[in-house]
Amino acid sequence: MKILFGVQGTGNGHINRANTMAAALEKYPDLDVNWLLSGRNPELGCGDIQDYSWREGLTFAVKKGKINLLATLKKNNLRQFFNDIKTLDLQPYDLVITDYEPIIAHAARKRGIRVVGIGNQYAFKYPIPMRGTNPLSLALMNNFSPATTSVGLHWHHFGQPILPPILNFKKLEKYQPNIPNKHIVYLPFENLEFISELLRTFVEFEFYIYHPEAQEIDFGNLHYRPISRNGFKQNLLNACGVITNCGFELISECLYLGKRIYCKPIEGQMEQLSNAAALTQLGYAEVSFKLSRAEISAWLHHPTSATKLDYPDVAQALAGWIVDGCKESTASMATRLWGTNAN
Image (cartoon, rainbow, N blue to C red):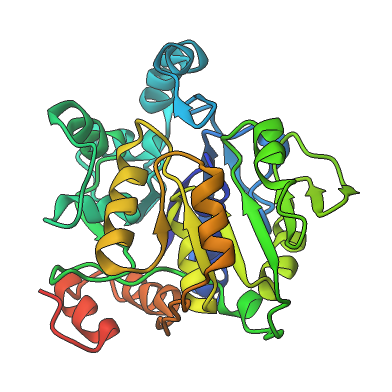
């Protein structure tokens, strides 16, 4: 079976999930998987996936933790996007899969070809906790990367045919005792200087700050680090808490590892606002809609117990499902993977 698998490269969560799926699919020698990456500078790569094609795709621009619509419109080349949809050759493939990558999704829909969508975004077709929704945002969510078969992922099934998160257990299984007062800070869409000013006064706590603008340097209790998948994971394993946005993949890893979470959704992004609503309803994290010194201080100085969840190996289950021709219903898969009725 020959597969084209598209990856939306905005944020590292999609990249991590793609690498996990790649490892699971490699166990089936009869599969021939080609990868397409978009929405990301090609120099940043696709993690451990070395052989892939690249398209410019679509992404969003964020300034000071808020989506900037004007900058987003200027940043995206719509003429190139539609041309890539028109010229993408899907004829060699038996199956098209998208991790919210829009070019192959629209190319498949235009040609009447079945496309399987896998990701957190596909969970929003069901009645789950949502925030920041309106007809326009829902239309954008549902049509950004349309799929004929949707496999939604979330931290809980909410009584719907939604699967648990896809996690790379190999990189998370190297258990290390938590270092008291060590925290990971991953706020790539926030101003680095503002983050520093916010945290430097908490001198009794150590903060490892991963940011696109950071260079590796230690300054008092602030330890700046450039974006690094392996270095980040090593520090995450023995941290006691994480301060981050409401991206799906990192919070999934934190819940699996049992890390305390303080998170702020990107303003104006429906997915992150809705993830914040889900975390609040489930009681899995401390959620704030504005980075506040007082709230962070309360979270640091009055720690509550962390949530630890034992998620199943969803990547391997999906790989087997793909090999079998995607025949099993998502409702049946959800029930099997959660171990309870999820439909």
